[in-house]
Image (spheres, rainbow, N blue to C red):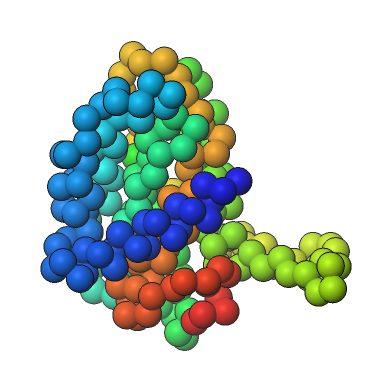
Length: 211
C-alpha cells in the first residue's frame, strides 16, 4: 500500500523542516494542524482536531523529550483508512546499529469494539512497519525477483521486536480502520529516531543499507 512508504517520506521530511525552522518536531505538526479546518473535504473523515489529540497523547505517554541518556526518540503522525495515529520510537545505538526499544502509539479509530483485538492489530502493524523499514528489500534484475523464498528475504526477528505501548482515544464515534493504520507511521518515526541518534537523514529503504 502506498501509505506505507509515503508516510515514511513525508514524516521524515517534516523533521527536516522542523530542524531548518528551528522548531521542535511535535510543535511544528501542532502549529500546522491549527490552520486546518475540519469537514472541508466530504470524501474523507480526516479531522485536524483528532490528529492533534493523538499527537498530544503520544507525546505525553512516551515522555517525549525527557528520555534517559542514550535513548533517542523519533516522532511520526499519519492518517490512513480513516484512522488517526501518532507514534514515538525509542532507540538505542549498539555497534553502530539502531536497536528499537519501545514504540508508543496513540490511536483514534472511533469506538473500540474489541479492545484485545484492536491492541493486537496495532502491535502487529508497528512491528511489521519497523521490519519493513529496517530490512525489507525486494529487488528485480532483468524482470526477475532476486528473492523467491524467506530464506533470502530479510524479516524482522523476534529479538528485534520492540515493546509496543498502545493508547486509544476514547469516544463514541463510528469505528474506522485498524488493520493498516498502525504500520505507516512506524517507518517515519524510526527514521527520525535514527536522525536524532546519528545525525544521518535516511532516504532509502531498507534503512539497514544506509547505516
